[in-house]
Length: 148
Image 1 (cartoon, rainbow, N blue to C red):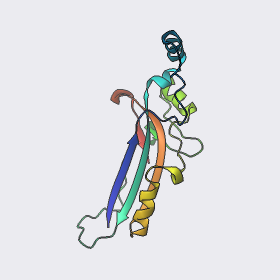
Image 2: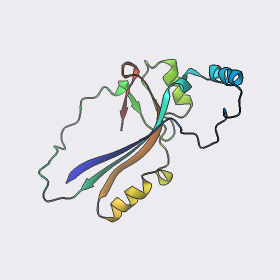
Image 3: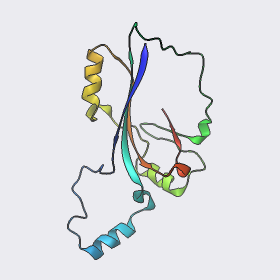
Image 4: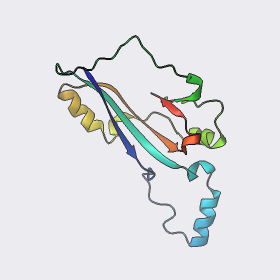
């Protein structure tokens, strides 16, 4: 059995509403941008992840099930559909992002890869995980790992 991951990143334009800044004058636009919280100065992405297993007698790839990675769970962002958690030592931007819905699991039925996951399942692949969430992408020195 082979384990395969498909990941889709959708960039910053996540709002489904019309651009609220389109009709503003330059001074109005500068004031509106300056009034935004720091969290909105980060680039936000929507991440969609599908992990699936494909049965194949040709595969020579075997994973030991008795081994787990050595993770410092207190330093990870933990996804949740109700209340995600961030490490205690996060800064205000990450705390604001959490307030704005970052790292909250999204409903997978209406996601871009939902049809693909359904077709894969019909063709015999076993979907192990299908999750999606939104998050700001920070510079490497300020980023946290996400526990999936």
